[in-house]
Image (cartoon, rainbow over all chains, first blue to last red; front, side):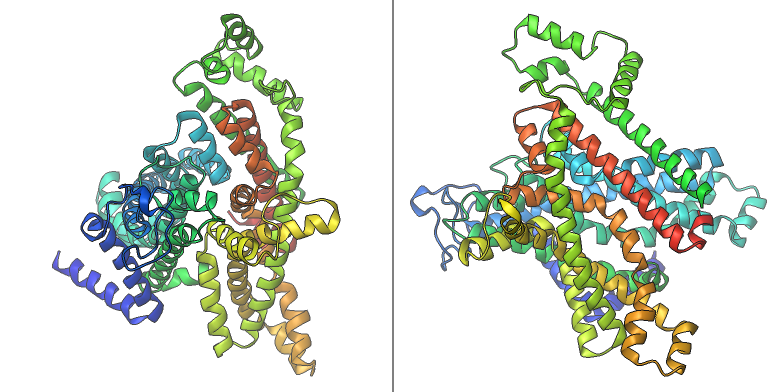
Length: 285
Length: 312
């Protein structure tokens, strides 16, 4: 454990030395902090209405103004971060876990199983993400769980393919051959020896995947097909802002900027993490 | 090459068949009676019975699937319950709008991205190269629908340079209406393509035919523009083909934000009116489009670079 902690420390140190990586670390850190402590930070109740002060511009009381129901936009932006991470984290980690398992099985198992799983991955990838999401939402109705499911289902193949490639390259390496000749079981080889070698690459992929997921959640909520009102989501802010775009610009700005910032932060962090964890990946992109 | 093409299209067909089957089963797996969902709570029993027979829902599931495929072969995606028109006709009426939007987006972003990437590669590690790199990352980070909303706010509502809604009439009208949505969709591609071209350009610049060209005293501009760039833009072709799915997805949002006709607008409108045959028809056709464009990109890649035929 002590060893892995120092490794983690090295990685963070490496990321912080790269200016873009440091910026990413700061942005992501701020977002995560705001999301965790959202309800202590917000100056107003994110869903509390106050019709008297509706559609106001920015002021010292309302930093980003108010919406058509007099709700404080700044509070809704902060609380929206919580919703964004509530969707992004389980979806990305779920997809990573399933993709990792299937990918390792495809890479290590028999050829027919490999072909079958690859066909499955290719099929899932053949749906344009948003179109697939719309189809699922149309069938089962909009909710937070639906968004998580769609994101998970569509990103499993990405993780699966990478895990498979990594497993295939590791499969014939000497330490695996040695382990196999000593009669180690498949679960032991995959779990104890291969997993630690694959998980780092997938973690980088996950960091770079989070912004896509945040954008998809916001997009679906913008279309009115994601989280339900009055839950404060960045996409829902944009939806309100879109219908009121001629009255006030602040809702669109308030909903749009955090999405762009979050995307920037996670992208910077992911790229920097990739360079630190595995410099070889840089060339592959 | 012929063998590769056959294999690649065989795979595309197989994927399409599995995808369509998955889609079909997904509709059937949803709890509740599809007829009731389609017709809504106020439908009469006679109407329900007629639709059940029309959709062959009283048959066993494998027979339903066969009937579905039989109809699909004839280009029949079913009938729109509300208007009585064929789904295929409705979808294909909207499709050109979306395709023009995608074409417009990718044209300007590829042109600018290639120029930026080539320039950065020709002057590596200068200030301009770094600025391009930073801009690229930032552009990649901007989701299309956020860019669409912000550009609507700035250029249509505040500055009023461009129209905010619709697709326009006549050539100039259409072009004028295309500017903002195409800008929104293309922006993230500029950065992506620029980075791609820069990387592949740097690789090409190190090859021996470039050294030979330089040794012959051909001026540097010509070396970069003609000898290096021609090879370096090849990966862009593949990326655009594979990116068709992203482009379609972004187009959905751009169409909603700018209230343009198109596939995305059709799907969203159909979801709100619970018009399932149209939703499914649109999803199927866009999936088909995506599968074919991916296969075509692979083929073009294999044609240009024979090494790709044996890979995998």
